[in-house]
Amino acid sequence: MPGPTLILDIGSGTQDVLYHFPNLEPENCPKFVLPSPARMVAQRIQSLAGRPLWLHGQNMGGGFFRALQAHLNAGGPVAATESAAYSIGDDLDRVRAMGIRQAEKCPEGYTPLLLADFVPEFWNGLLDHTGLERPAQIMACAQDHGFHPGTSNRRGRFLLWERLLLEAHGDPAALLFSEVPREMTRLADLQDAIGGGLVSDTGAAAVLGALHEPEIAAQSHERGITVVNLGNSHLIAFLVYRERIHGVYEHHTGLVDASKLLEHLALFRTGRLTMDTVFDDRGHGCLTLDLPAAARGFTPTYVLGPQRALLKDADVTFPAPGGDMMLAGCFGMLKGRTLAEAAPQRHL
Image (cartoon, rainbow, N blue to C red; front, side):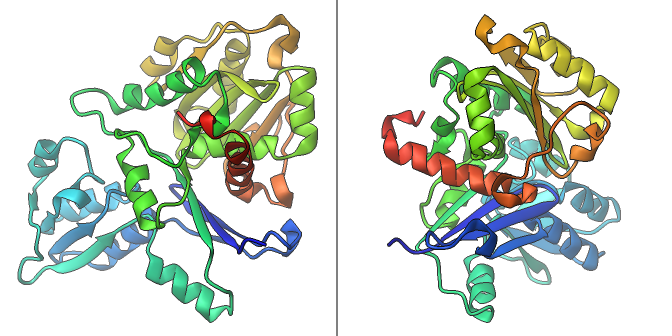
């Protein structure tokens, strides 16, 4: 029997982790909900107020940006390696314009600060202290805007969903990568850090997490459903019919209230929410295929994510894949791996 798999869903606020043993029921598998790597970096920056910082490591989630900007505004010197600087922005000229100088070695008097979505030493230490064996495989998901110099990251990221709908025929398992597209630089660095295991975008992992529940997958074969993931920074919704995605809508959680979101979802389900409407509202966009009449309006709505309470008064269902809503992305990656192993050609 294969050994355990360490599965990480790395968000902006938390990293939600399932240590999956194939011989155990999901309820008996170890689980962790920890501060996200970006949040830990932000806390470290705040603890080093006024001291010169040297950022090194990899391209990671940029959730520490406000703390870094505050450090710079207070006159704190900052240097960074090229690879670490990409965590701050794709355009290195703009990064330098912020007052961050490039340095491939730590300047004298500067405090090194590692940037990484996954640090093997941390996880090895945690597992050792808890008496758990080392994993046979590691999988991880994170949101990656992609490397799109000279263009909007919001537009560039939506190319991922366009490929999913138009090239992969809406198959969410196609976004579980054994070979990461070259523009997905954060996921590429993450895959390297975890030792070459499968990686995915958090959005794809979330919809797969919903479909991990047999009753939700079965309902998607009877009629269309809407799956919404309300993350701490981003929200993403999918129109799903027969376990295939027919539409994607992505916005920023902090820019919508319940009323606006419900209005957008109503338009989305009928194919009337446009890319420009969402983009002009400072979101990412919206794209739908021709919606099949047999989907009957995609009315049943399943809401996941740490900000799901935004829709607490709406006519929606709050599923808990594998018995734990916070681990929806982890269970989604498990489902995606099973689908990918059954049909390797699914990959984009």
